Image (tube, rainbow, N blue to C red; front, top):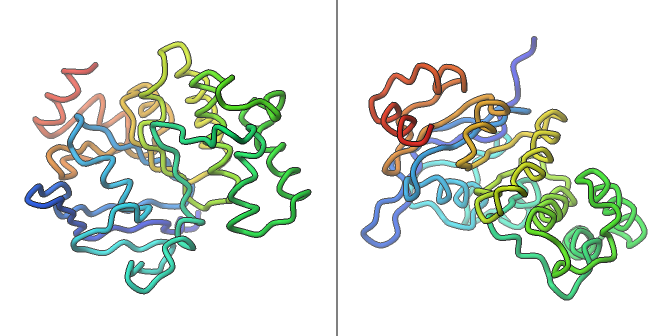
Length: 246
């Protein structure tokens, strides 16, 4: 089998906010079609790492290489880079004054200058994909949290990204709505989307992740395949963390 293409490579990534050193010498690689899951306690740096990958936060040191190209925030057009890297946040940030379909069409129309009929056709296909075809003309205020998050996923996919980042996509949801969002994400994983997911859902990490990275205090303490990391963690801190949540 041919070697999988490297989608993201991070070398010695550091990020501070003032005196707070949030990311410390992070090394990481994400191969094509891989689902990489970041776990760890709140405040361990997971979300900041994701935001650095999308250049919503700018690193203080180290390298971020996306699809073979090192990104220089001072020289590269970060909006272009973000077209390759879709991101879904904890809070859905949908436009309340636009319908579900308009929300999904917005970026292709404005950023990619797609023609409207093409954007609409693709938008409807994406809503079908996330199980919300019948909600196309509804406004976000009429949706449940789980439905809003699935619209947010469709919206991110509308840009046809090569990589999807998910920052705790289910943590703002009521428990009974978590499953519908996770099943949408599982479907994407089955289709081969390259994904980096920050989540507290260990069942998802175990079932869907190709690799799980445990972060603590701004460092990657341990990485491994899910069965290995969950069943046979090597580092004491990983053991302590898993025993506190499982």
